[in-house]
Length: 398
Image (cartoon, rainbow, N blue to C red; front, side, top):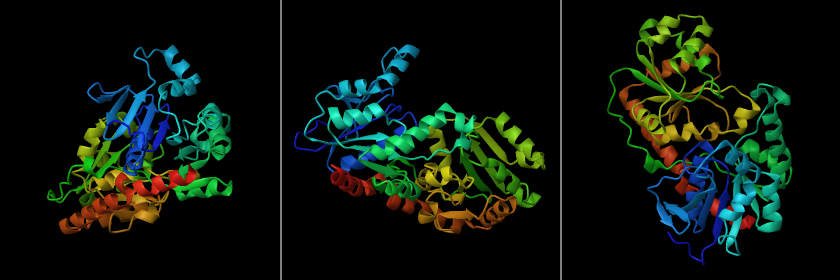
């Protein structure tokens, strides 16, 4: 794709491993595609490794209508990484040579990628409005040293001091929108986005009477597998024999330690688990296409209410409904018995009730919920449905 001088341009910058290196890059990629649908040429500068097979467009790499390049050096030494982090704005400025000009509407970055230097560059060098995409509101309890953690203090500095100085903030939830509305920053809520076309059709015809559950994630993160295991232990032997729980991410040793910490009937539980360990994203999507439910439980906290689990839209896009408690903005999108089975709270009893509801579903019910999930993803989370709204927001800021 060659950029047309008549088109408006939107520049996106971040030190994340764009285009496909981490969750923040995945969100940037989807948002870039939404913006491109609105008629703008999108240029992204990241810090990822570029596939040699991608199409070149001058000094830029082109894929699906997005132009991007990386500031990562071929010799990615520790020294070069430190230098890039310290002087990231200079690297961005160099990469954007020939792009910045009167046709650029704005600069977009992530809240983790925001810096005082970037604010300065947008205001005094590039003279373009800065939009920050904010997806988290950290709490001290998330960090090993609490309020004395350097990572927590840096996150708090960016959230409380730098974000309000941006021209606008795209928020992943309404709680974040309320926070920035209070300090007078222009806001737009955009949940996690997916590309429905990337997901294979769900294998709804396959049903041997076993309830296939799936989880992908990490025990060091926000998810609560312990409560789910405790709920599984409340099932009778006959009920538990009809459950197969596939887990991707944590190692068998980590899962074993977690089960032992419950101290209840661990042998019964272990027999119903299928542990994959760390797997590729493509294998995660493949597993999703053959499961009845994705499991996701999270404690209620400011952090879980401010964030939005991207694995929920991904599961729905794969045609897999979710067994979940309500955090974030999930109550806006999920309907109990339609695209989800809602767990009332994190008590073992509530988890067991939800599991028994899932076990009671017949193949027709499962097919219906799978189709409802796919429809919800296509109409509420697909990047194609957000092009007009995000473009209108950018134009109002610019």
